[in-house]
Length: 125
Image (cartoon, rainbow, N blue to C red; front, side, top):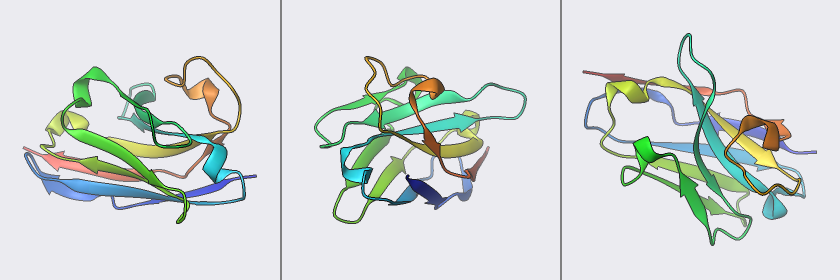
């Protein structure tokens, strides 16, 4: 069992930065693949970034490459999403997710079996 709690969302002007945090409880965190997804009003939940259990590999959706960085601290059971050069189109509810299962591809929501409640990120132009 893994419980996830996101924090760090808010309102920021275009070009600004935010760092999202996702605190996890449960002994399986250090072996879980962690991901960030987002969902804008009227749109489907979309993949943002994922990181392997060791932090050795990361993957990003094309629209955030070079601007967002996912990282994790297994000693603190926390995963982060540093978001720089934010754009209005980044506005969404951001969700942290954990997968304790094996998949070849972690870029779709069905690969994850634990989800946080979400945190709102609003980027004004």
